[in-house]
Image (tube, rainbow, N blue to C red; front, side, top):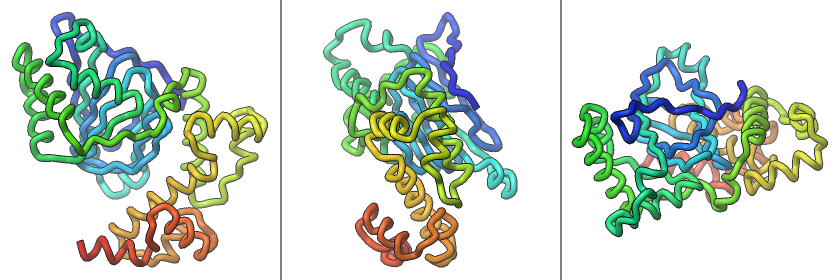
Length: 284
């Protein structure tokens, strides 16, 4: 699956594009485009990649992505098909000219939010946001535009907004980097339950191991091992909350072959052990 520069088709009488996707699972490749993108996941779960960020997503996930920032929502295709699941999202895409063509002071907060989106910005779910997305989907013309302006204004004032990446610079991928990064992601998930070899993944993208380590640290601000551990602990957290699997089962399911090492990594990322984490979320 190659990374692509996506061309967004926009009708002549519209200043932005609103699309609704209802699919068995999200299947877009690692891609980027010159438009900003605002995505709301109404149904579905998996792993969300935005620039250097990799996190789990679930229903209610809402993220604003800057121009030319590569992104990718990944569902487990086999799991979705085996369990009869489906995915549903609403995506709004718009060009920078919609807000940067004029310097209206009333738009200052929105313009600041759009600048932050170079790192990707996530928002906490709210019923208000959900209702607004569906309202935008149903409206047309001037009413749709005003609803969209109102949504971005609310988001710009929302104190729950969270940057997905520490460094803006880590988001500035070129097209060739997107292709390499997609290869790396595919390799990680193909070998998620096994030992993931740094040498083999370096060979996969036709780099020496030292060169790959430098490339990966520059792009993600993490070592390859740190990045893989982050994905594995995120998956382990999900399994602890949503399943009755034992901690040892989850340990091996997420690619660890040592329970003591798994416990140390989990505590390093979550500040508490897996047993305490599970109890905390059961109580809440």
